[in-house]
Amino acid sequence: MKLLRVLRVISFVVVGLMLLIKAVSAEEAFPNQPLGGTIPPLPPLLTNPDFECTVGYVPQLDAKGREIFVPAGWQLTTLLGTPVVHSARIFFAKSCEGSAHVEKISGIDSIVIRAEDLETPPEPGKPFDVTFHQQISVTVGGAYSLSGWMLSLCGGSAVPSDCPDGVYMAKRLGIDPTGGIDPNGENVVWIENRHNFWENGQRVGWQQMSVSALAQAETLTLFARISSPQRWHGNHAFIDALSLVRAPLALLNVPTTVTGTVVTLQWQGQLFPEISEQSGSTHELLFDIAYRHEKAEAWQPLAIGQRATDTLDFTANCVDTNYLFRIRARAEQPDAGEGAWPNHRYLGLWSDPVTVRFLRPTAAMNGAPSSLSNRAEHLIYLPLLANQKSC
Image (cartoon, rainbow, N blue to C red; front, side, top):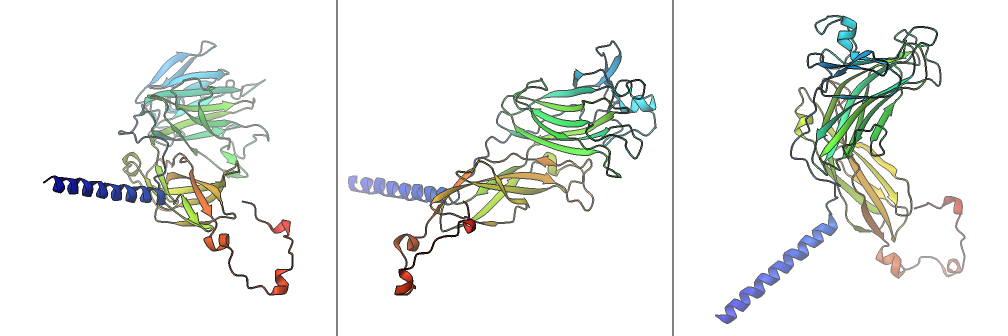
């Protein structure tokens, strides 16, 4: 009986070691690329993302004691000037039920911000800088993506636009992953767009922007900002249709070491229901891949807009050295055909880098038989430095 027990224990140990070796080997062959965070269990909830007058606008007084109106659920920070801030529908149609055309992307309304003394001499279109922010409960370590639409009209709505070179209006979308509410805070991640509504003889119109961040606190702050730093007549802008979702995720599978100069990259991703289940959605996952040599600082694009079923072979210029790879996912709808509206595009975060070691082939290390003649063996060839590839 004792011998039988001993044999059973030995068999369990042997099986355990075999499974452990198999797991380690698999991990070395295709390591799970860390995503740099956790997957939030629930989608974030954004209040009044379309800035609707049916939800409400809250009256406030600006620095000069004049009444302005801030969309319910949002807070206003004025960094420069005293522009008009209002519901676009109420401002132009005189009521929330008015039928007049107003600039918007979603619903029936948007925010309008108009420079003080818009067309009034002697100094029309005074500079301004305003930010709307909202704090959202999130999961620490979760990746979130914000999409939004804005329209800026430098020089008013007349076409062609007379907005001079060097004068611009900046549309900015931002996230503070620490939950701070200062738009000038060092933690805010911004995306900026300076396109006017009319450029090069064509209407540019509304601009969609995307930004993403990894939550570092249980509260995350969203910012929508319009800055008009120079005085110019007619300067005004609109903000509409913000959407916050769990960011699309990407996983890069590569071996940790390869012999030779070629490695095959494989990847997969995840799209969350708040994106794929939007009414009419045709969103699909696209992947961007970048690389760099271990001694280089700048990342180089390797592939843009790859699909989940794709694979990619990378050829290194050097061996006995390391290359780093990273990947990010994007959720976008094809340009052609119908899809969800507003057409939001969601940007994922770059993954943590994966390091691949490229080893010199054994034959090259041990010295392969030379096919050169005896005469050739005694010749010395100097390399042409201009033709040498850098790692």
